[in-house]
Amino acid sequence: MNRFFVDEINDGQAMIRDGDFKHCKSVLRLKEGSDLFLVYNGKEYLGKILSYETNTVLCSVIKESDKTREAGINVSLYQCIPKSSKMETIVQKNVEIGVNRIIPVISYRTIVKISEQSKEEKKLTRWNKVSEEAAKQSMRNIIPMVDHIMTFKQMISDLRQSKGLIIVPYENESNNSLRSIKIDRSEVGIVIGPEGGFEDFEIEELKNAGAHIVTLGPRVLRTETAGIVACALCMYKTNNI
Image (tube, one colour):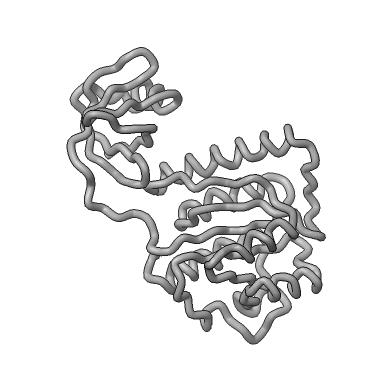
C-alpha cells in the first residue's frame, strides 16, 4: 500500500501536498476512495482518499497502524565529507538501515571544503532530499535530518554534550572490535573519518571525548562503506535488523 508523509492531522483528516500530490494523482493515479498509509509525527495511520483539491489530496484518517518500523536505538552518524557524490550514497544507505541523524563533518584531511553558506545550503537541500526519498522507499516513520556541517572541533563539543555511546571505526586499531562493544544505551554516535583517515591528534581528541576506537575487521574500508557497516552492526547487535 502506498505511504505518504503529511504535515499535520486535524479532526481526522490530513492533506497530501506538493510533489507527493503530483505523485499520487499523476503517477500512481490513485482514485477517490483508495486506501493508503499516512505518516505523521513518527506514527503510521491507515487513511483513505476523500477528494482531490487544488494542489492537495484530502484524506480521512481511519486508525493508527500497529506496525513498528523504527529501531529501538537512536543512531547519529558523524560523517566526514567525501569527494564527489559519495555523500548522497552515504545518506541514502544509512537512512535505509535506520540512522536517525546525519551530521556532515570537516576534519583535518577532509578534501572537500565548503566555505560559502550558499554552497552549504545547496548541499544540505540535496542531501535532505536524498534522505526523504530513502525514508519513503524504506518505509521509515521519520525522515532523518542531515544537519548543518560541523568542523571537527564543533563535532567534539557535540559529542561531549551527548549522553550516548560514541563509536569510531579506525583503520589503525587492531584489538578493540565493534563486536566486543556492549551497546547498553539508547543513543549511539558513529564517527567516520575522511578518505585519508583521521590524524593521530584527532583520534586522541575523540578518545578524550569518551569515544570507543574500534576495528571493523582486517580489511580497510572506504569512508562510504565504513559507516554503512558500523551502523548495520549496531542495529544487528541491538536486534534492530
